[in-house]
Length: 120
Image (tube, rainbow, N blue to C red):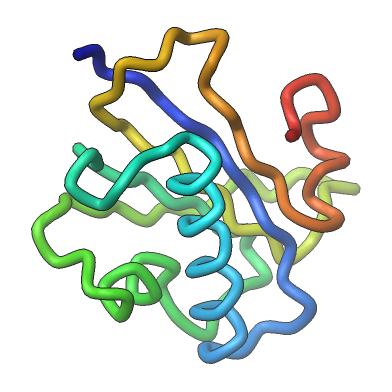
């Protein structure tokens, strides 16, 4: 069993807590599903949000899904001019038998433009 890092991102349509919870939940569900993982495989999750998101912490969405025993951390993305707005990113550290090349990084919706080289 190895420790792997799985990346993902989603762009929110609006800065509202319920919408953030829905989109972050979808993103984590997709990351787990596409990699054949469960919440028991999670070691830690690091979230970043662009500076234009103020309604809630992305980690609150995961706690709302019942992930209670995994360390979570939120941080703010750099405020780079021209960057895609309203984006939440996840860096998930997981235990898995997948090789680095087998790991599926997940970029939902418009966020797929952020990493065309690895978006699934």
